[in-house]
Length: 304
Ligand SMILES: [Ca+2]
Ligand SMILES: [Ca+2]
Image 1 (cartoon, rainbow, N blue to C red):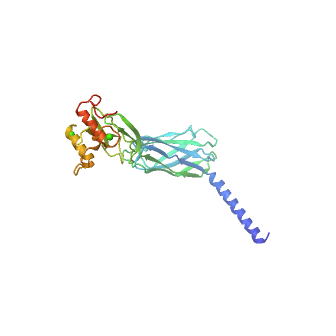
Image 2: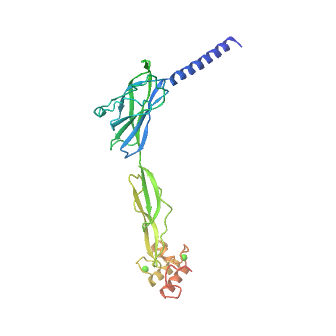
Image 3: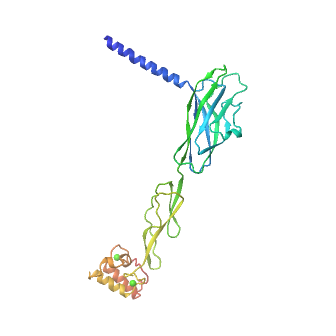
């Protein structure tokens, strides 16, 4: 092995060792961490835990809490780590931002080394707080002591409260109020329509779906969307509301391809009285028999 290679190897291991030591040291700092909380918009109060991690041994902590103006501190509860503690939750102080949190075990002569919740911060959330924005909560200027009355170095992990867009229920209803589909949609997003509904014929009248009565894009509230249909009378080629011999003549001319009697001039759905999807002379024969009140042809559509 040449000298350069040996030197390089040595440097390599030295760097690794230094990195490991740094990692060990940084892992060993007592850390006060605010646990971020995400709630659905409209939530009026949140409880934010403040945790101690990598606890190297403490007996008291004093720190300053600063928080977003869309939050209002309503109370501070002691957590489990320092159970016999004084927690500066004097109501008069609550309005101050920054707010001083002070925790001290007045009885223990030994270091508290448990990890867990130091305090719970209860906040009221402003009604107009921005959705999706991290409402920051931070701690700073901390002083902590251990049982030997030595300063304990603290690291902080700041947190936030975030309002998540709410879900809104979008209901798709049929003409008679039957629920075709229910969907939860996030604020500002779009609902997806169900499969095109089919409305049954009734008393010689047919229906064709024409769309939904309102938009279901950009949903910002609970929404009901209703199916809309166009109605037609079976056999009523000219759309005047009754099936009579005039319609029969019109259909004959359409089938014979007379000028001015094209498909676009008549109601094709109304004329397809056997509902096979096409207009043929059979449909016209059926309408003739219906008009002549043949037995078996007394109602339309005719399903043979
Ligand atoms: Ca007619
Ligand atoms: Ca037909």
